[in-house]
Length: 428
Ligand SMILES: *Cc1c(COP(=O)(O)O)cnc(C)c1O
View 1 (cartoon, rainbow, N blue to C red):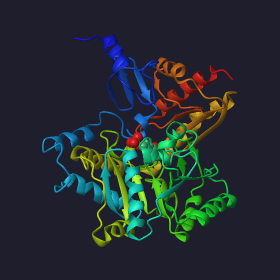
View 2: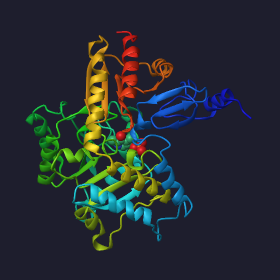
View 3: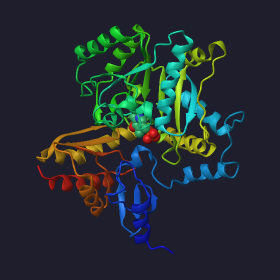
């Protein structure tokens, strides 16, 4: 039997973790189990989870209903190929997704991860224009500060500075960028911003297949909240210039912003929408790209077929997890639950505003952000949070909470208290 120490040594030697070096490994903590909103480490320490494991574990860990749903499916079959075969978990899930997303979205493509669902969305847009005879429409517009994933096409529409463009510049498709929507959920719409998009569309619409954006919240690119009204204006501009509108709801979907989808803060609908992350309640990797009949049937004209088909497409275990997660979500009074969470975070994080290291505290739905004036050193700050019994993973200047929806007020207070203490010890 290996000791835990030996495991951790092997981890350092053998394993890449997200965005890490193999010669200067950052500290990693060995997890023994997780349940509800708590993660237990090998040494018995228990951490309150403020991250929902990258925003996915919305119902908490080791949930009896989720576990049962996967076990039930496991006893039938865990996977079959989706070419030529189909199954009820996938059909049920498609039906559910169509029912809860805006009406025009009627067709579903399943893939294995958020990044791939973005690749699929971009391919759908290009293929659509192709069958419409507009073969030059191959490029995309995205606002700066966006994040859409780590695969190549997804990277090409991520923020060109924060993102990975500098490393991969020569290998990435050169897309078009516009400024990020001005921040402030209730700030009046700035028409200069829309004019910038209009000017770009006017000069390049013949090359532009789609406009991709994270609705209402730009997440990994800076936790920026903006007025949903921008999206209505962008929809109109896209219509005027024959450009498909793509919403990346991978982070915002399934309740995180206080409504089922961020799109629901508007009265408009995208042509293509990506969902992932919380889709399976954080149990399995699964994503989906939804589209309307215009795009789906357009691609299918003249014997056209959509050219994508992952090996694990529509994995039944993942679909079963997603079906169970959506059922749980429907049982919550979601609007009330997330409003409550927002209220708890607002009160608990408020004291951080007085710290001189802090630029701004902002909360929206199940997202609470403490933005600092200077970036933190992750390898220094992470162990401090663990010492304080919380799991919080900041990036750059942002220390944020995106807890499971089932977290209680006391746990929120503990998370906020830890943030206050750790931030107050930061140099300024
Ligand atoms: C996380 C994320 C992705 C990428 O999803 P993966 O499952 O990590 O590939 C894409 N878009 C947004 C908005 C995300 O938050």
